[in-house]
View 1: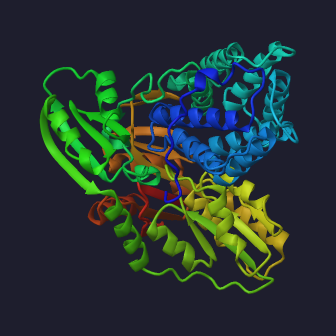
View 2: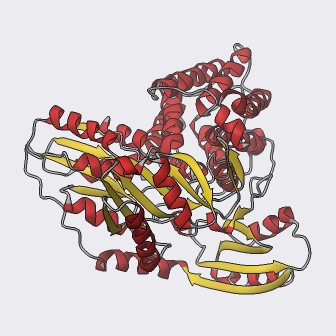
Length: 563
């Protein structure tokens, strides 16, 4: 946030590919353009979520990963393309977030490897670089799945082969963008769950936008306004997330709720807002729209005046962004201090990822040595995970990611240290807590790792949240705004209220055959409502041990551990 660098595309993009070769500054300009276009289409990528849950963060993860890559070269005047490419790859590797970000970093890693010791890149070298990018990306995933970003980079590399022996020119970039587009459109045919959900692969679409941004730049086309504007459900808007991307000069956050008097021309609406500021989000629900934007001080009233001309304003919020950041820092500093385990040299330290303050306190009570904030919609970077354990006074470390989209970043971090690090592939908070119950700081490392991995199978994970869109998956029909339940990550029911969803979840999890049900409640549900749900569960399962804990997690009203 503090080190984010503001930039604007250099104006001579149309001349960039007039030469048969590209140097480091040319690659820098293309990366800048790809990042700009990806950022402006970020919400389009985020919306390509298979399940209707509030964790559509692929676009955000790819933007933050690519931003970290660009930050490595933002002030560099280096012309050697090999050196620039390696700096990009290093930045992407450390800044990688989520599975899509990690794979994107591997693409850059392979690309850079092919450019070793080269001053400039011509078409044959680009062909080799894309082939190496493809190979490295596939090797970076234990079980590659087709119909994902991997397929898209493979098809891009294959399309490049037809230009072997030709000059590096705009037509080559056009062909690569067309290949990426075709590949993305085919992803539902390769991955049936995408076809069920009616979406294309989000990571592949993000890669397409990066290349398309480069192409638009060299053609002299605008990178300011996305081609399509995504209106999110109000429940899916992520205001906190925009705090990670505050650009210099954007001093105020403005949020306006309004009801338009006529059908809203979304393309014009978004385009007009783009002239006022950044971090634009638009949400809709029951005929009401919510507009979110970051603007400089002199523009702080412009969005309000503009929206007033479109309809009836029902609510306005103007916040000083710098004051918000400072307030957040003070809250974090004055919060309950966690009593993390003091690890001695030679002992095994556990680092865990936690999505809420209450859950962090529970993890701390079970002996973890470091906690990384993160979870759904806020995947930590490789660097953040690495930083959490690198200075611990031991060379034996176990990482609990507690989210399927953080496992790859954790493995990346483990590969970047001389310490002995094991990643337990916990996909949920209940799995992480179950693994910790078998943690022995003084045990033999491999034995402890094996025991903790085995504990992942001792628990079923239930999650209750609100559907962000209407969809039918695996026979479950969901309407936007309904309460939905997931069991071990799979959508199992949609209900009109949290109580019904919770009881159906427990029934489908065969809770009657278990002994303990632990409820972790989130930020957006009251303790009184949780107590009512717990009382009903006790009535149905009188022999079970029922526990309630404040989890503090966002987006998910309840997380259930069924043991």
